[in-house]
Length: 490
Image (cartoon, rainbow, N blue to C red; front, side, top):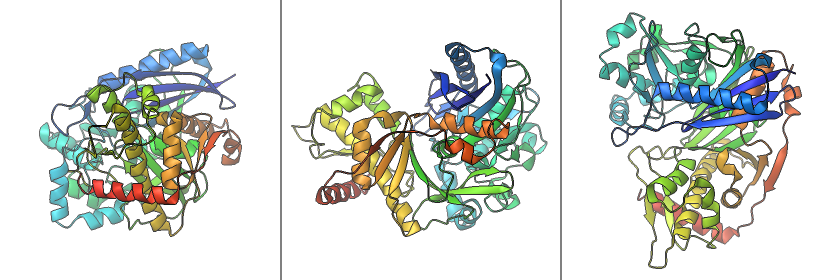
């Protein structure tokens, strides 16, 4: 028996999944790592802590699967997107901590670019907005902060999103590469040419010499070398940004297929096939994947805070001891008691794109309990996603009738029912909620020949439960109206 080792390097933890030749999960392990907030609006990760969390998860997952590491036939990799690192090409030492996708430190830089009238051109080329969310302004900040522009231009530095950084680590610095789903999130790749764009590189003053090669998702990127606990020579394939990997893992292979992932943030993606849909309602056009010569595109809406809001209830307010307790607490009440929580803890993403927005809680009375706060928090997560689906439906001039859901928070049945009610759409939850890791494993299986086609992969997907909308129209419309009023105050 041969196995695939899938690495899912996320915002708060690294997860490793061991999957057999039938794509059944044989063992899994997760390792959390610290979040660093040196200033308001600054969010960072220590790259050494990320790498150590991956190594720990690899060792534990192999032990739990009770396999010999020599049976691992391929490694797939998926990652938190946009998070940015710059390191020395010779020493491998990072110049600065990883600047996380949630970080808003480059808000002023983005504002100046907009004032120069550059956003329309940036959006046309990339499908993205000029926002601190993406990688280019983070690269610019690191180079300025460390006074390293000359070194970058001399070819002495490497830029990478987390996939590129981990690929560098897994191959002992032999491979500096990425793929199109991550590259399309940097503000530096042209969606039509699917390559780095000279005009964009000039705008952000990012030297081409520091950029990784862009390969197809099912390419063999390299082979392991010097990784503790793994033999040398394991092929690395199936690299994807986490949200595109979830789309792949949910078998959303056809145009019109859509999924929503409930992780640290919430991400709604729809496969648009070979067609780049240019949103008129604040959504993003992005590359989903490229297999062979055929690129597949997607329309995306992102809410920066979803599961992170539950973590804030736990760590910030202390009204729950663990994230899993939020469902039971919210179930102690029948509704929010008029409380509305807008989870703009790091600004508002699509379709609002307001980096200066801040979270608010309104409607508190003497009768408000922590159960109402928990209920309002879950409802706030769902309201954000409903904003995204409405924007997507407006762009497509049609309504999605079914959305597949995944991610850790999708185990929360109350949250899923709330979401189905507000969306007025059926939700389908798979048996394997770790669809990001599964997507990377599936693509690695394709890239290394363990599976021959998407048709073969489609057979591996199994549903767990469907959630049908139950909320009366009048109540849903009232909830939506109250939410939109609250958002204006955020």
